[in-house]
Image (cartoon, rainbow, N blue to C red; front, side, top):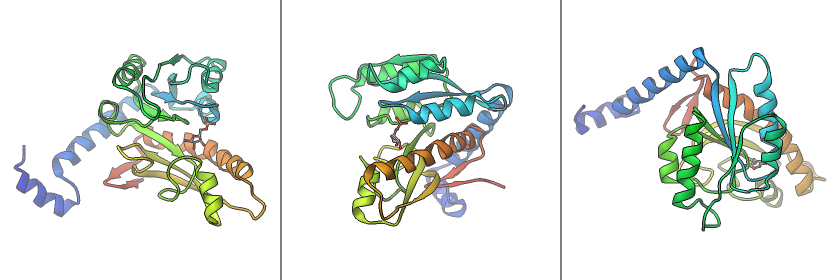
Length: 241
Ligand code: GRF
């Protein structure tokens, strides 16, 4: 392996540690090769009603789709997303989240990883999953976890982003598809869609229009990543020509 001082020299030159860049290129090449031979498999995690899962399932059901949903998992036993998934004929599972309120405990995290590996997923897609994913999980699916957030990040991370936007008084908000990292709604941004805030908006009407934008944006953005059309360099995601 290249000595660290040389690596950092080249890092300055190319903008990225060359060893990491090689690993990244190799992974992309592997993913691309996989996408030519079979559909890209998605594992979906959600805690709520699952309207994004619905949009994604419909998108994947098109004959020309290069993606398929391998499994849908929830930390909430009676979550709408599980019944919706079943109505699409998808495999589902409930994993008890353990003793914490906002994250998975170690055992739960292991079980989520096991279930996703059993489903041989290539990417993990969050669709309203209300637990923070950390260390072990993100290492198991490094750079393969994607989320959608109902604001134009980095504005209004966290809960009820549409309400935050309305109360702040911004004139436009929207939704953001991003990779998941250790922070909260802080990973590299893959795609965004703008939604105007109207004078007569309530939190409910604004949220409804943002959700409609999510159903359009999310499946397409996931597909771009799945088909290796998105290159990540630091915080920036590019579509190479
Ligand atoms: C979406 O608004 C998404 O932005 C956020 O959680 C919500 C999930 O909604 N991460 P649904 O369960 O897909 O309807």
